[in-house]
Amino acid sequence: MLNRRFLRIKALQALYSYAQEENPDAAAYRRRLLSGLEKTYELYLFLMAFPIEFKTFITEERSLETGKYIPSSKQIETLQLIIDNKAFAIIEENVALQSDLSKHKISWTGHQDLMRKIWMELKVHPLFVSYVETTPASFKSDKAFLANLMEWLIAEFELFESFLEDKYLNWDDDQILVLKTMQKTIQGMHDKSKSILPDKHKDEEEDIKFLKDLFDLCLENQDELMHLIAIKTKNWDQDRIAVVDLILMKMALCEVLYFPFIPVKVSINEYLELAKLYSTPNSHGFINGILDKVQLDLRKSDRINKLGRGLVD
Image 1 (cartoon, rainbow, N blue to C red):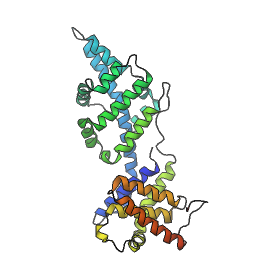
Image 2: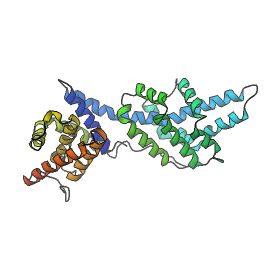
Image 3: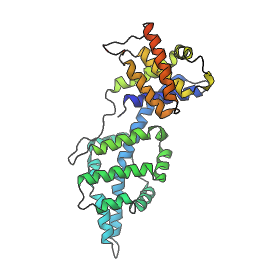
Image 4: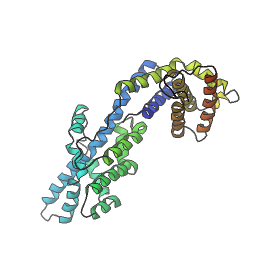
């Protein structure tokens, strides 16, 4: 889940915040950087727990409707569709998810008003109307409904997004990764799924080391990295170069110089992709031109030392 690109993004955010502060404390920023990874996973777990709590709410609504003097059979049947949703059931019954929710003390308890507002809008929304009209429901349609429901809540239901912004300070930074991971989790489920949670890390120890080293080495070698960039930007007004662009170039060169097992092309391409996401429309071409010139000079002076065949090219 927390792949290398995401780790680079977290390091970029930390280095950008560090650059904005007058007297920053590197150790404090490093601690926040590492603790932020856990917050990202907790946000993912919180969203994964939503179907469980929503199903509980719907079950209570069905009980209330059934207990009425003149219950609506149509309303009961509609509520029952969500209760019987097989994708909801797989999430609810997943042992590993329940264990992690308990471990991280994650719960939706106490948000009945939010659930009610969601239901009031959802029951007349085209995505739910279409789901109701899918007869009979299949596991495929159940999964599609859940995936569409989560996308609708996050992309269109402002009250839901505001709620998440208030509850998780990292929502703005992590929402894309978390939503994509949840959608991938849902898409990968089958009707007998027992294991649905992604690996938080492929290699946690290695990932943490990469993140710490990237942050620390960028700061420790800041003057040298800035010097390499300055040589190739003599004709540019340094004050007009975006701070994000400078940080992206320093991070790329940091990997080129100090990370012997990451190919040069991989490092440069990764930061060019981040420029598309986090900087100006013209930044990609500018950064690409500067990095290409710097890495050519580093090759000529034999300063790129990669361990393994093909890692320099």
